[in-house]
Length: 223
Length: 96
Image 1 (cartoon, each protein chain N blue to C red):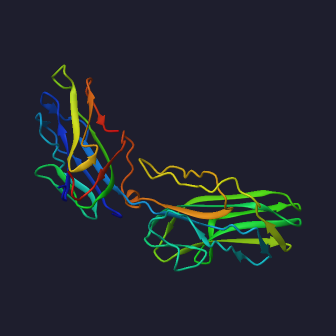
Image 2: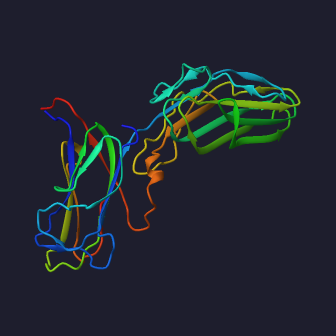
Image 3: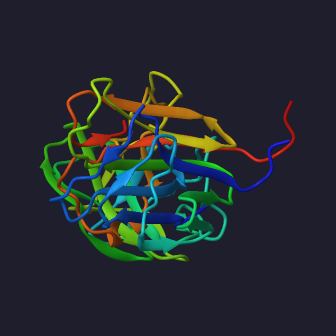
């Protein structure tokens, strides 16, 4: 039986006594950080969306098959944050307007525009565009993310009529926060989040070699 | 699991005998369900999950030609239970 706590220690396995550096102020250092990723996405399989110069919140009524630490129920068509932290937020929309128009896409936090999470493109009729937004942002519990679009003049923004697959996934958080990786997709716009590790931000930067490893701790009955 | 973190370092000099644990004397940051015993050098992880552990040791040239070896060992972790790095020249060791 493996019962808590798990203990970790750094041991001198050299055959002889080892002297610490007499000159360095800090002779040794060790940092432990728990990984607590949260992730999820919302999507749509709609064929089009009607846009005007007033921001239209997109209907994202499909949820990713896997998610952790996020809430899809409290606010419809949104991702609601359960726990405060640093999150990576990605959004993507593919499509084309039926008339020439200036089209914009923005990620909104609880109804408010977010800095650096906005794109606008002036397009000809039936000109395809892919909006893609990504950023790391600090989010608080209860805040919720939505996608909003505008069009000047009014237009119908047609989404791709057929997808090439139905899978998408994120990379896991591992040694460092890595870019999210998406596979093929059937759905055409989404917001996704991966929760970061805010305690790291509280720790002083270290310029010396400072690499990492992962361990997994499981408690329970084992053979 | 969220927001569990520990940052410890060693600022006192001297030496460490074979098979002894590094006794970090300074807890620079701690948060959540994790603890450190400065008397034994052991860190207690009280919650199941995945942890990232980073460490390094700055040493003087060893008197042995057999090199240096530090091991980050654990009791109860499913992977890895025994990691180490060797350095025959001396100097800073850090785990990967």
